Length: 209
Image (tube, rainbow, N blue to C red; front, side, top):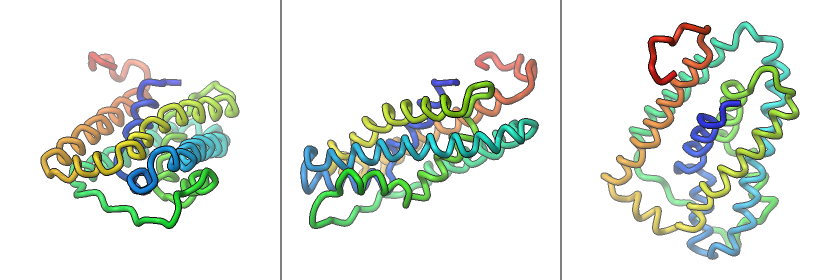
């Protein structure tokens, strides 16, 4: 399993503005970090479990389509490049609505299953990073552990920073720089993953592959 691009992918996808992070930021501002912690842990654990389930489920299908791995990688990486392009064009993040009380642990776990971005991320991750020759339960377990360890501090930034980060990103220049950095990481990783799926010797001319 190639942990470097896997970690980068999870970091970029979990730290950028999205429904989960906006809810955590709003809760952190209104209720404080300690009362937001159950939702934070629930979202991180729910994300890890969802990724593991998708990896195992899609792994059974992938084993039947070994000859299509390169094309699946190209399709997945095309989505990553499109997502990177969308990041460069992203505007100001929206504001999450207030709630009477903070979201609990169970709410954090279930919130991921209602977030289409998490579904797309999990499916794409399973198609691109699932290693061949490794038992699916082992790969799913590794995915879950890595996803939890990476996602927890990344989404925790939003719960902890809250208003400070939102105010920082309201500056058009800072928001543009942040989006371009995230987009560049995502695009570079997408090209790396495509090169990794090419036949042996096809990338000998590329010095960093």
